[in-house]
Length: 507
Image (cartoon, rainbow, N blue to C red; front, side):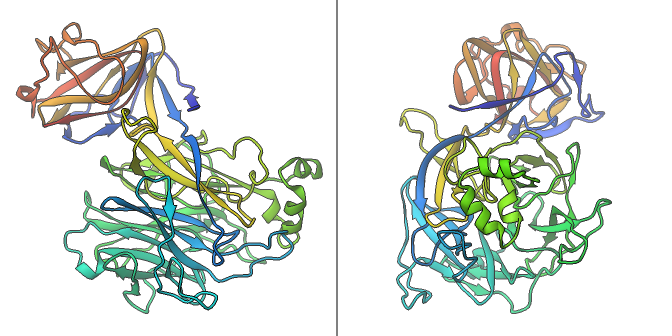
């Protein structure tokens, strides 16, 4: 079941900060997701709904000799018709929880054609436990983490087609390069980023819209927002996310703490920020929320496997008291984010190995996969580890509608959206939406003064209903809007028993 979370907004008229801008919004042919008020001047009778992903099958068990109870930080990259999932492999505790650690930290890769069935390639690159028969792609003394990406910078040298950030002892970040994503080398023996706390998934990427590299890392700040260190005997800081940029992947700016527009102060761990592939001007992120609860003995005993929890708590109390879950956030500048107060991935119904420090760590990267029914449209897949702290950790797949993070939702009483004045390019307007059997959408094109353009009025619009990622809007069975391209226009959209996820003017 795909649970959906309603955001409590008034059904009265809501005005956004984008009310009728003086100059038209240059929309061009960009796809717009309704994750914020970017394309909302007014709305009435509409709710804003965050959609939770659907739990699917377990796809991988970390049971190879070099893996174990601390394997995590998955990163997805598509290479042709093959999906790669990179991850860190190590042990946190012994099976019974009586011992901490016990193995090297290495970076590994598995491959899949469908996102469901994964295999470990026998790479033969690094010796582990006396053998090179393994899927290890990177190993070095004191390795803490390794996060690669496929560099789409057109000026990227062939031997740097893949790049990665790798942390040594969690104190500094090194830049790595690879021609094939399997054979890696350091770009320099000198670290490229030194300010921050790097014991997490340090996420870098090339931004084609802004022509620069970004890297999101972790840090700590105090109650007034000043950077601090979380060290024994020192000031215990609040976990935060920071960002730094670069033009050449060698020289980086000083990391800045992210700003949140309307969210309470909370400790955040991984960030999973990157441009959304169907709307690259929009950054989406899936941070992990870190919650250290002052559990009573009764509360501790009520959680899954209290014996193991108590044993690992003897090494550090937070190993038993901390719980985590997955969040969702978006940004249009990379620095200021809207973080949804509702949770994207909950720990879920209590099972033998959940409600622990490690739940909700979402993989980095979204990939399109086929739906279970081959006649249905594709969906997004991503992954999260379950059973942290124990041998036999597993990876579960989650799925979500493409563009389906957030929707404008109308109940039985119709609601309306009015956009700011905008200019577009293209010949057709397409919508990603879903309705009930009785639901519908209609679109009106208006001039800058708010008057319906003849032939494109609400009454001319053919009813839109169904559940589809890409439906072309028609007015009296005609879809061509190219005569209006480049002119200031507004959209008025009426929804009834419907969800609108995104829109795009396309050729």
